[in-house]
Length: 206
Image 1 (cartoon, rainbow, N blue to C red):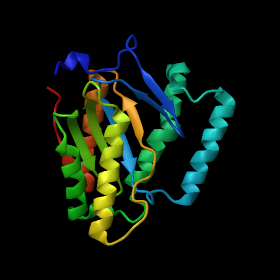
Image 2: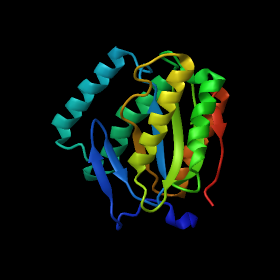
Image 3: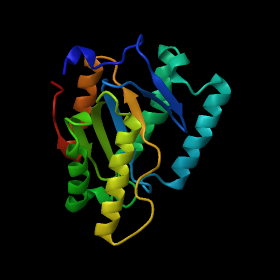
């Protein structure tokens, strides 16, 4: 894998979808993913976030981050993604991912198709959320990778815990990495979770 070809290419095809968050996807490029347990944020936080997203749309008229200038884009990620990261790191909810047998389920799922459907980079399994760097192989959609991870692990975790119901929050956050500097910053961010008790696996893309 050529490291120079890993990053977002503004001239190449881009698949964009929207739910609560915008999702940009390019095959063969490195993406930073975050998903969390369904109970990881209190209802008050979720309502606050939803209210501010609605206000953002009224002010800006778009949910497409590509249409924002550099400063507006920075403000968007600070207001939504970075703040949610701070809330998650505070350790809200049941934090079932602290349990070693649960972490092992997630880690095994991440590694299972590494080199076949995707190239896996560094990851962190924290108390209530997961961070992953991943490059989808050609012909493999990022959403199918994420869905497979979350669906398989949710079923297996619920079986181990003897419970049922939703384990993961439905929507994940994904970010197309733009350059080497951004990749190193994200890798350092992932590695930093180890000091807070997360299971961290470090891997460079080769």
